[in-house]
Amino acid sequence: MAKTSPLEFMRQVRAETAKVVWPTRRETVMTGVMVVVMTTLLALFFFGVDSVFDALVKALLSLAE
Image (cartoon, rainbow, N blue to C red; front, side):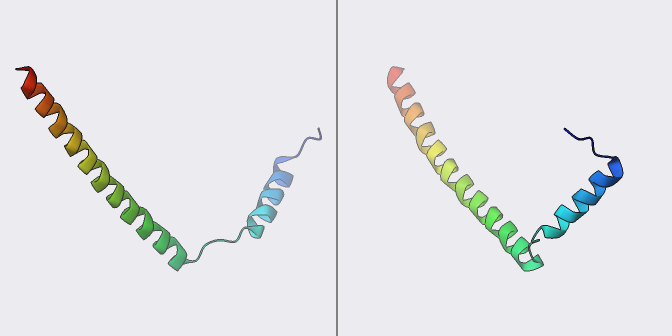
């Protein structure tokens, strides 16, 4: 394996970075909004599931008394 000098490595990094298609500001904002929306929906869903399980466990424990 050939050794690459730090300067050559930086040139290669710059060349590869130039090939990247960077998202636009609008795409970045829309993706961020979608992440927040989906996270909120999942949090509400799991809160509901947890509440149901909590009620079931409390009901079962009250039967044991």
